[in-house]
Length: 459
Ligand SMILES: Cc1ncc(COP(=O)(O)O)c(C=O)c1O
Image 1: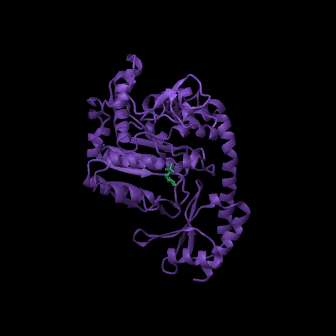
Image 2: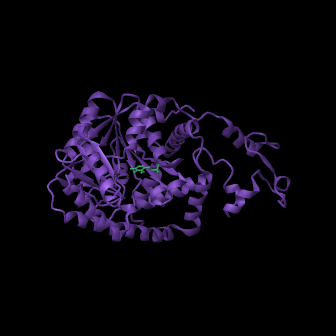
Image 3: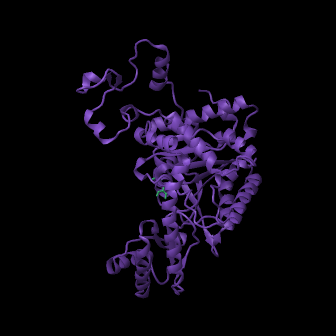
């Protein structure tokens, strides 16, 4: 593939050496695809096939992938939807379903905002399937960051970003201080953008709302401020700005003042070369943690191409790069869970999925309210809770002059038998505990907070 249109875009300019280099060659999948259409006799793919009766007692006359009869006891899904390889980028139908889902999640009004929906449908890629959101983060970080280059992230972030970006890829994280006076610290974010723009030809950042570990979701007002800050800075620096939007906890927003749809959609609407990339997963969104299915959706700009036809070619070129990466790393993703996702949407429908999930969201919301109200009762100058209104966690800051987070975590566990995650990174002004209230039953929350309070008194 020549990548004729891709090479002209700011997206390409933002690619790492690996991003520029990688592509999916016309290998086994190409030849077997052609053979399916053109051949009379097929001997292409490394999947054992046979007539079912030849390898299963009492089997039928279908020519199908050979399988062990015993596995059919564990699922009533058709064996053809379980054992074969899924295509590299994922099952086409599952990808299309998720694309429609991304459109639906924009919450654009089907009548009043028809134009926005059309624009959205046109300017997003068909999601490629990854092995969970983690794999999407790895893939995007690799495609945009050379070793030594910077990605901007808040100082309070999911710890695995550091493993992927710094330890694995050898790139660097430019942290900004997440909060100031219970609001997002936009000055610090702007400072980080300026620093990064001063040393490299692209600005890459990762944002995650609702955030792990704090549960922070911008208010609707803050959401607008973030978007215009990025817009302003992209204009000033005139460099491609890639914003990886980690939407792992997207649906779990509990406060009506908070931004209740991904920031991806507002970034996509901008004319500037701010390239949003949406990372989704069935992990938390559909509560299938072990399914290991995620999605990467890129937002494109109309100014990059001069016709719809070019736009379609551009999408194919981008898809080829992403599939090239997948082929080289994990080859393809779990077939069973792609089928399951597909069936959920097709057979049960979005409304039923949302109704079932609403029960879980309600449980979490009650816990969110309870834990915040219990914490608010503690009058202790050595603690503060970060702003939070969504996700699975909240973060309790401890005064580092009095209490060190690791020591506190150890004491809380040993003496009071309460397990939390201490995070102590004093060089980044972080010293506190992440409480995963998603896993604590509502009636137990007061007891957890009581024990935390008792532990605080010991310091
Ligand atoms: C912010 C964030 N992103 C991504 C992930 C990983 O998602 P997945 O399990 O789909 O890889 C997590 C999981 O804890 C997370 O907290």
